[in-house]
Amino acid sequence: MHETGLVRDLIRRIDQAAAANGAARVSGVRVWLGALSHLSAAHFREHFEIESRGSAAEGASLTITESADPADPDAQHLRLETLDLEV
View 1 (tube, rainbow, N blue to C red):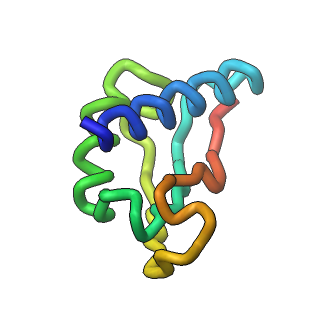
View 2 (cartoon, one colour):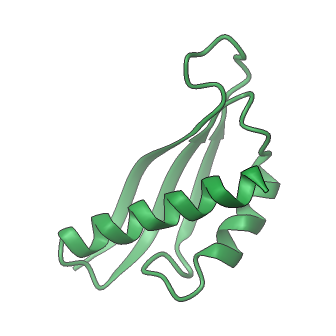
């Protein structure tokens, strides 16, 4: 599933960022969803909750911005905007 792969990759990047910064956990995540990413905010949230289990991001608050611009160069992607880390 394309969506699962996108979210798994995002969780991997979040875990790497948390480890690189000596964070015990991630308390907040802000992401941007491209218009052609095939993910609604609700669908992304479901995948995130499942894929983040056991990771530094488990239980993190999630802020999602959805793009409506299919011409955006990143329209097929999701983008990690910010992380709130607990060190």
